[in-house]
Image (cartoon, rainbow, N blue to C red; front, side, top):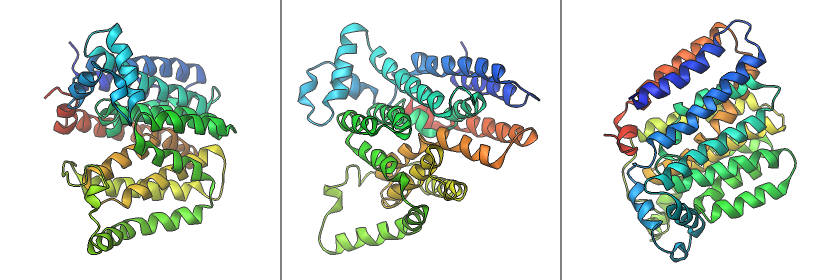
Length: 339
């Protein structure tokens, strides 16, 4: 049987073949993105359902979902699936649905006239920790995020209803998802305000929590998982996310079209996460929301940089190398339940 890293390598090599092809036509990119889409959805139908958090979810699907005051919609979905299929298929189906919703959003966002950007976006998906840790483990968060970004595309095309619809659904699945909703809603503000907030967020967060603690306010009582120290490469993730946010803001310029607003939404989400950088797990949960925006944002930057030919090949080769390190890393393998 093909191993998980081998399977993902195959997915990436298919995209690399198209991206490295000289004079590749839209038809080739469309064919490739169809294959990518199928393989990415199938991934969770094969390797999903065994993560660290899986059994707490699957146990929750056994009883009435109405006992969950905050996330009853998620457990209602699981409850119904649990009546139709055996464990761990409810989680496999939910994880695969997260991927499918994201792919549908990407295709709508870039449109039928830009299949190359969709191929790049799908190439990026397996290179993100959130693809495994949110879609494959903290599935409530992953489903909420997938619904939000699916509705985000329609909101950016001019329908506020879709953002409100996403807010209601996502809130009933994973309450912190309001942060991503807020970032998308605020992405039409002037870039200078976002630059200011991003620059000040790490310092403001550190000083603010110190002031609260000095005043006798126990922030651990209000911030879930505040005392947990489970984040692998915590500071490295902050530096990478923070650096990418600045890169996206540079290329956002002063435009305010739908693609630019996604770049700004990423930076806003990173700024919110940076307020909590001293708290490993809360910080990384919020940062994961920003990661899910990257397949939308980075192809836009590649367009603005006019990367093609050898530079695009170098980008793809580097991505495959990073991907192999991620797919074989103990944190991903253990989290998905294959250690």
